[in-house]
Length: 275
Image 1 (tube, rainbow, N blue to C red):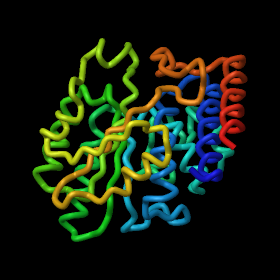
Image 2: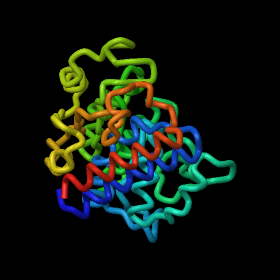
Image 3: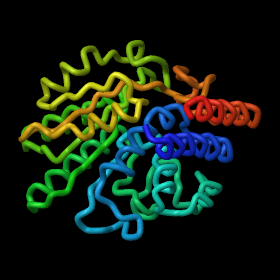
Image 4: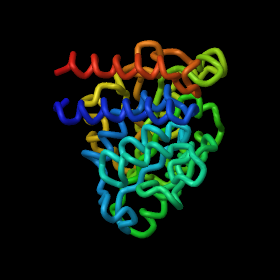
């Protein structure tokens, strides 16, 4: 991973901590786990123009696990869609940086999401529309593992396979935890890869979804003709912050001031160690 990309990833993590700490609410854990995937999409993969967010034939991204909006906002600002000054308004009345993405108000957001399972369904529809119109638009979506307990996820995969949507890439953030505990405790997903393959997805496993180079390699892997791609990446919830890592309690809880300071110190140490 290039130093510039490493710095972007670390800055996005700082922004996640500061946004949620300032607001006193939000979802840091599952935001921290998807940083590398979002940075790879917005900085290396997607055909987008921050100066023209509504460019007609742009690639589309849908954050199906919409509660991880702080990560998306951090990357959008780094990419130039809006000023980082807006972070001070996160989750404030009247702000376009709401707790879940708002496509009508936030530059760079292609779909309003939050109800789990709906985002991947929207992405499937976008990919189908692009196919029907003969456009080369690529559609990407990030889903959660807890989210994959929703039937909508599997209906969307079934439809994507049926319509041979090889312009759709689904990225599964498999951090193993959700708001009430581990996935296995709440509702075990079983053999994730086998399930998605059975529903017609071309499954590409990523051993470490917080390793930028591994994620980018999976994104760069060509689609199997006629098959939607499912990138199954194992991640660490709360990645980069020592006391948040692998702790389900940080799914939807904001850090207090002392915790903010510790989190930012952890991220500074992590960046310095990697230089």
